[in-house]
Image 1: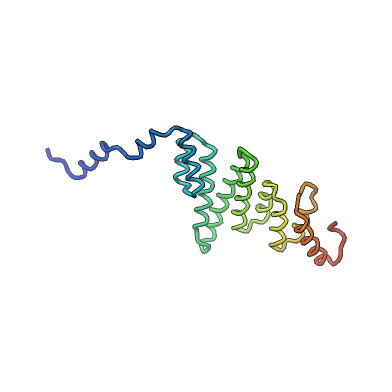
Image 2: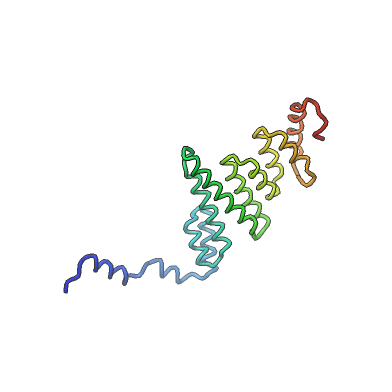
Length: 188
């Protein structure tokens, strides 16, 4: 009986080993983790997700997925406002989750700051500042409010005792607030 080209192709596909399979079998979890980190730092998020999965590192797989979501959101044209907004919101929420589950203070700060930038893309001012505060980036939080002409909110950040806002930013906000409040002493 003669086989068709399709049957021959199927048989060849089943018997011909995938060249990546032999490569994959040669790596141990530590090597997959190293490869995942390399791919992640080069912005190759899809490949990093696979590598972290092979390394059995759920945390880093989640981190790579969150940054992939941010990349997808950035690629959506501004003209598709609703889809872009939903994509950035999804990325920001995923990045916040990564911040909550971070393995170090540096990673926590990085993920919350990335979440804040996603929120900024869609003008969610309160969420930007909340994420910046979670990252202990009080100067950036006050500056964000100030740059968006939300002087009262900028003042509320610099007045908080736990907020460590640099002196120059604090002075700029106070000076503008004084002019805005026409000399009120309420900002001291």
